[in-house]
Amino acid sequence: MPTVEFRGEKIECEENAVLRNVLKRAKKSPHNGKAKYANCHGNGTCGTCAVQITGEVSEKGRKESIRLGMPPHHPSHDLRLSCQARVQGDVTVLKYPGLFGQHLDQDPHPPVKDADPDTDTDTEA
Image (cartoon, rainbow, N blue to C red; front, side, top):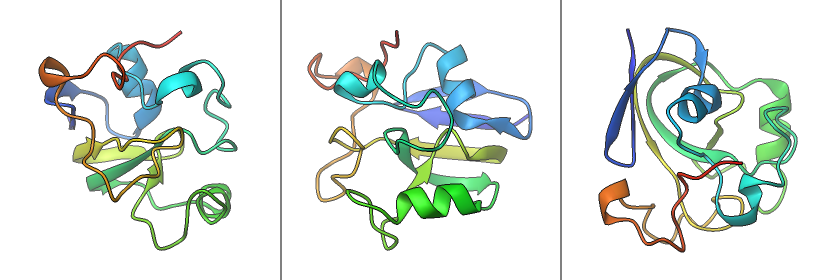
């Protein structure tokens, strides 16, 4: 059973589970700020659930590649949409600042216990 490490916590999931769903079931959010409420709800069109993933996940599909190729994202950014990525093995997931999680020039959000309430991504509507 794969393990997802997100903000210092480990979450077990079924192989091939959609990463966004895994996080939501664990009461974690792949969104920042108002994107927790205003997002495409897993359709791969808004880009607000972009995260950096290390480990085994599915290949990028056409829809995801197109969305990550549009501003504020860029094809050279090492990001995935959590609503499109399927967990295929153990993964580590980092969420960066910015409404779209696009500020790779800044540090990723810290583990939950060290979180700043203004940047906390754990509350989902």
